[in-house]
Image 1 (tube, one colour):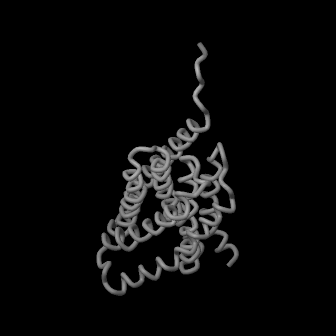
Image 2: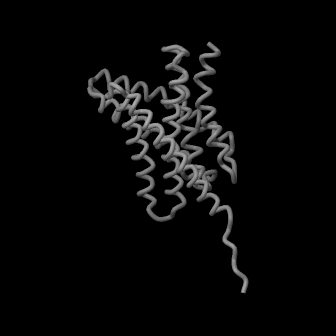
Image 3: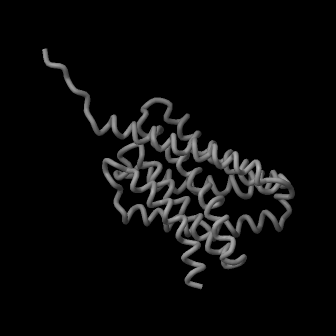
Amino acid sequence: MFSLISAGVAPGVALLSYFYLKDEYEAEPLSFVLRMFLFGVLLVFPIMFIQYVLAAEGIVASPAAEAFLSAALLEEFVKWFVVYFFVYDHDEFDEPYDGIVYSASVSLGFATLENILYLLANGVETAIARALLPVSSHALFAVIMGFYFGKAKFAGQKRRYYLWASFLLPFFLHGVYDWLLLAKERWGYYMGVFMLALWWVALRKVKQAKGYARCQAVPPVKSQA
């Protein structure tokens, strides 16, 4: 049991540590990061209940409906809601990269408990595949969400546009991910390309957010006449 739970927890903690340590200028309070992680853990239960009701009532009767409605829309909206209402206006959200840290905290909390429950039901032999696909994908969707949260808060203009992007882009990508799993017979071919592209985009967003933080941290040098 210990090895199974450890296998379920390890990917989420490793990914969160990676994104947390990428914050080079002002590390976020670990207590607040862990609080958001626990928020994500608690989201699993109401989301699972709603997904069960949607399936039982026949509302999600096709792979596309299950992928985009039951999984992507529900999960990404609830995670977005938590970040927006508990983090976005918080004093600790004081640089663009912080959006990535806190979005990743919520998403990886959700992904970690979901992963543990899946391994309990299906066995530890699925741990590697789960780490490479569902847990990683939740983290990468969160990077994109957090990047646009940071843009919305610090870009000044186009605030509403970036807030919409912080929800719609993760929702669309999550829907495509689940649709590939559910609707494609040889989903592995498509998923490999999709995940590589998703990692590339997410790491670019990390680099861009760190660049914005660097611009904020280093004031411009005034020329002396």
